[in-house]
Length: 471
Image (tube, rainbow, N blue to C red; front, side, top):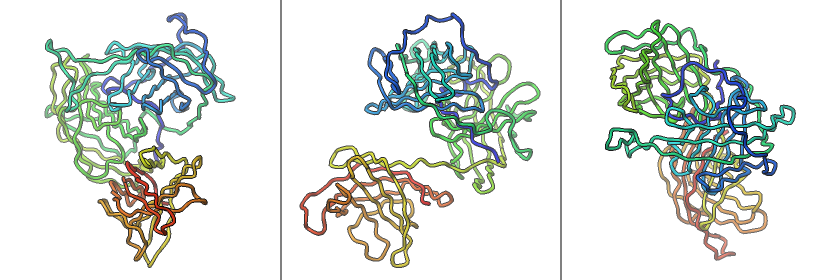
């Protein structure tokens, strides 16, 4: 059974990423050193185009499989995110210029508005950066340092294609992240095995035709990674001429036909082909991927694909036709770890519970589910109750449980010491429900009133969203 390798990083435009890893060592004297760290313990700080970015919400992971450290800092009020990724971390100074020389090290900035198109310190677009690790404590598992980087992204149109100016050049946008500091950020160690490499099953199949000629893989790599909380599968075949063919797709697609994209942040469905003649990677524009079999129990995915390969940056005029592509993958780890999420607005005030649980019971012979979300700081609680056999769709919320089929919303302003308010109107929408994994996702809104008449208050629950696993 293959293991997921947790790469807690966001990659930019996957066609830039090399199929061969590069060794990275601390730099010596190449950059001017940053000023001494001045932030508080646990704090992460920087300037983004002269605007302050300060947060204590920073997660760090050291992945031992590839000895890579990733720090992810989120500014909660705006959704802005800064991600620093460096391989072989130690005290010293590191180049964050992705693609020169490392194809791992980078600085990434997400603006909180269009996070599907991040800014990254990628060399090919004029990005650069440096990271100085001033303390790397493997006993306390904390890291401190300073950083700065220039991050760039390609401006995309409404169809997700690069915007081209009047001179035929690709339009880019730049963000300068300066005077970055972080102090004693705690990191966890992920020692999951696996990662890049030829870890495919001997029964795996990966075939296609390139301009009508058979593409036969002499080496084949099937890798499972997690990028930006999306579990991905990467299939890379290389023939005896060094030409490479690659397909990336989220591992939870299921059976169906899906459109490929020409650009990817590492979490999109994309096909890539490289002729090994010094030209650019040619990506799918257009293309389709069809999954014909998806067996979570046996870890099997089968399907076929086709795409037209072109250079998304319009540097290389080559066009190739990839046809009759098919693949069979065996022994995959298709288990999904779900981080439950639940959010809503209560009378226009944000409700972000720190406890989310799911219980089951039976009423009148009907198996029922209760999602219980509680903010232990304020003692506010929202409950959603519905039959376990509910299907995707939108349902009216009711107030009372009569025959077991009712869908009900409940709001408690102060658990243990206040009245309970039940939905007198509103809707529950199930947007996805995987019966094999019992993962359910949906939205909701309702008006809540005290049916006992002890309180005349009326509460408005809006913008509700949830993602949980029924256990």
